[in-house]
Image (tube, rainbow, N blue to C red; front, side, top):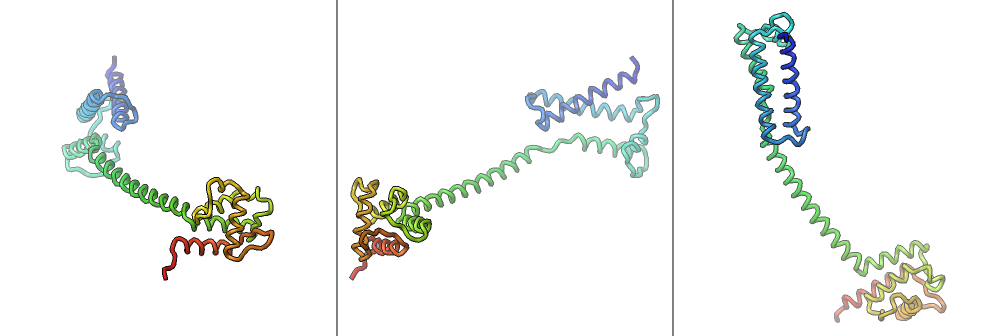
Length: 240
């Protein structure tokens, strides 16, 4: 077998080893055991050293001697050196720098620290979100939130709700009234789903405050203000 053929076989082996090793180190190829990966890395270093020695000893690849000057020219190195030794030292240093692998441990520690920082921020945000949810739940259960929802219903009916007209279509309104009357202490068991009972409760409310008109059960924003006043008198009575 000719020397040229042998050289190209070794170049192919070097290329395959380099590709597999670099892909394994960068974790592109997964599943390579660590001890095999270490051996591949050392093999790659050894091949690089052999290649450097071969270059500097002038191996004939194509019936032409490869000189240091030819290698420098092929690498587009424009610097001037005092002698061949200086140029050789420079090429060796460049080859060494190409074979260095970054210290991954430092990057790993940095990534872990950043992850811990992000995790801490996330925990803080989750705590604040849970606090906001708790406040929202408490507000949703409050008397004022029920009044606000009732006012939204009044607005949907153009500012006036007649509880006697098609009451079956006003289930949400009666449910809100049931919750409001329960808070005010004017609701008995079983009445929260009874439309007739809720109509009677609202009639008594209007009578208490002089708002009742014959054959009419109307809710406007003014009645909601009276409901708030009744709630405040009950929850925070004025002491004489």
